[in-house]
Amino acid sequence: PAPVGAGVSAAVSSAAPRVRLRALAPALAGYGLFGVGYIGYMTFVVALLREQGMTAATVTLFYALLGLAVVLSSRIWAGLLDRSRGGQALALLNGLLGVATLLPALTSVWPVVLGSGLLFGGVFLSVVASTTALVRHNLPPLQWASGISAFTIVFAAGQIVGPTVVGWIADGPGGLARGLVYSACALWVGALVAWRQKPL
Figure 1 (cartoon, rainbow, N blue to C red):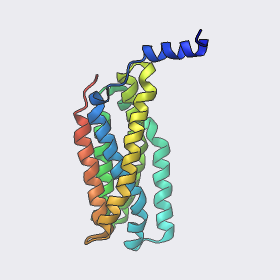
Figure 2: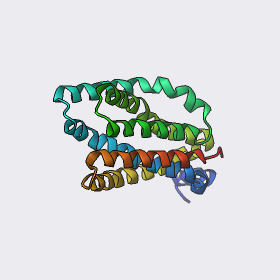
Figure 3: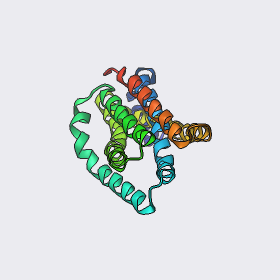
Figure 4: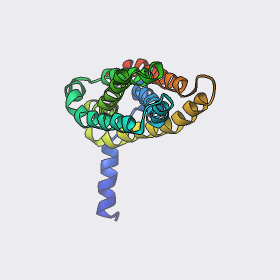
């Protein structure tokens, strides 16, 4: 006879139908583009700030305040993540990240650059949380791990593609600022795609 553990595993597998990834395609694509866009900012914003003439102390302050915004962000967006059953939260957060990413490419004025860091820090981890919320709102508990894994895979792919593409663009005319413009565009396209995600 088969071991008891094998029987339990088979029962669990049969009780958990495969995740319909096609039904989550807009959110998956939007999240992949988040990976492309956000990592460009995280990789190159310090180099851009230095290029704009900011001191090491100013850059340190920028990152410290960005980190503080990250700490506070979960409370800011918790209500939105609870209410959103489709891709609206992911779309909104991607759109805001696009704004944060674009600002340092347009100006070196300190209050604007600081606002960029605060907005970015206040949003980017909540994008990750939005996909977890989306999975939990739309899939049965037995499929949560598979659903979250699918989002993790497309995110990882985006993080690989992002620095390569943005770095290549930054090596051309327009430099780092142009690279961040393309990062912002990736985030906005991701927002538009994610908006098409309907509740399952």
